[in-house]
Image (cartoon, rainbow, N blue to C red; front, side, top):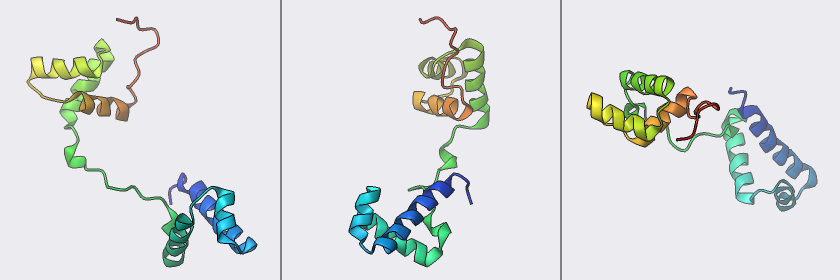
Length: 126
């Protein structure tokens, strides 16, 4: 189980325990700042699957087929590290000199995944 999920599971269990202890679900939900529908949804999931059922799931799976190929990601990262280009300039540069069309948003996604979304602090503003 993901260690980041443990606090969320504990919060949901605390709500159910508090509701059982006070005997009033509406009061417990108000105390925790949640809707009763959320309580009943969590309760059903807990009854059906136990603690693993309380883990938050993403609404949709990531589609890795839509991700930029590795060779192009390497070019994007090279341009960022070497020339400190932004997403717009990287996108333009790849189209102009490599005939590779990548949107600014795609370039930004690559930079975010690699942790290069911020330029160095000592860079001068253009």
